[in-house]
Amino acid sequence: MKEYFEKKIQDLQSQSLRRVLKTISSDQGAEVTHDGKKYLNFSSNNYLGLANLALLRQSSIMAIQKYGTGTGASRLITGTMTLHEQLEKEVAQFKDTEAALIFNSGYQANVGIVSAVAEEGDFIFSDELNHASLIDGCRLSKAKTRVYRHVDMLHLEQLLQASLKENQMSTVGKNQKRLIVTDSVFSMEGDIAPLVDIMSLAEKYDAMVLVDEAHATGVLGLTGRGALEHQGVSSRHPRLIQMGTFGKALGSLGAYVCGPQSLIDWLINCARPFVYSTSLPPAVLAANSAALRFVASPETIGGDWRDLRRALDCNRQVLKEKLGVLSHQKNMTLLGGDSPIFALVLGDAERTMQVSQALFQKGIWAGGIRPPTVPKNTARIRLTLMATHTGEHLDRLMECLEEVL
Ligand SMILES: *Cc1c(COP(=O)(O)O)cnc(C)c1O
Image 1 (cartoon, rainbow, N blue to C red):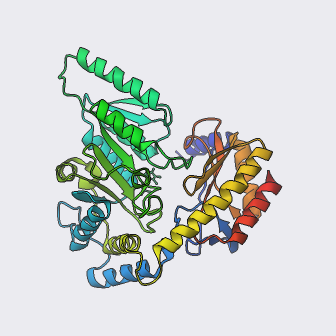
Image 2 (cartoon, helix red, strand yellow):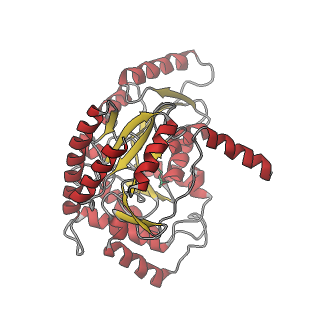
Image 3 (cartoon, rainbow, N blue to C red):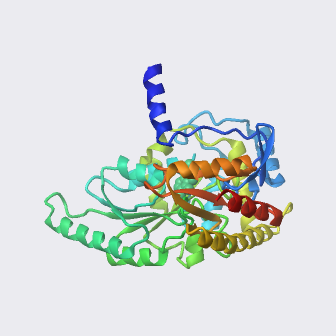
């Protein structure tokens, strides 16, 4: 076994595809410490810096003191505590939906939702650049998955049309459902799905839509509800299933799904990651509730969400302009910038890793993203912004990028 895996790892290494862990010994700020040295962090999804907010820390500590560290069981056994119920009510209120359900992570939520909603014989329509968790959900469900080109609404419509024909010709029941699944903000590109168009296609072709707001919750939309709010799609849209996570802008861990009560009841019964996993512990639930309160009622003691959002937006505009100029000079493709995610596409995995390593030596933490996370020949440097980056941080990033590239 030892030699077998050594050989497998060597194969990855020779294609510049080997990944290794890098440990951080500080908190998750705009500056982090690794191996005794400081780095500017341009790879975190802790966009607003909430992971370090005193309000969240304090809420977790109090919950541990009152309720302990673990729940001891899955939700349907004895693992449902008042903190779960409370957080679910708060999510439903925040998103203005009938009901909500908490999952232990976004990965588990997507795998659970897609495989519980789409059943054998149904059709799923999935953007080719969707997050791995949505892809795995499609794989686990017994539905027929049709992959459409990235944000290509013409292609999506063609596939929807073809499914209607296939349905008419089918002999095994004519009640097949259609489910469209998409990231709202794409995690490795930073662009935003055309959600208004997707919802109208869903109307036209009688489909449900699952929108993954992992990178948008707390960051996009006038009040931080996400990309649906940003694009003016009502949370109460009758075909809409929304999910999002607590691990990115909201600073802790876990995920939510929201929609009508009947959907939530179905997921409680059939979403296997929900049914068969020990539930989130008090410390995490309390931090999540505090984060939601922080976003929903900006006058909370200990900071103002609107200030953080403004700072993040400001950083985003500055970097968008600077990276625009740089990518033009260097003849490279720049992606993203409508969200706090940017990507400089280099193409070649080896070169991308060399650039990432050279930046690292200069104290800039900017991840090289390679296949299979992104399609072949589209390896890239992914940069994410935080509200807590300063002007000097951005200047230093640009200096280093120019030197290295
Ligand atoms: C990060 C992410 C997830 C997974 O969420 P976790 O809580 O980290 O498991 C799901 N979907 C998208 C689009 C993501 O970016």
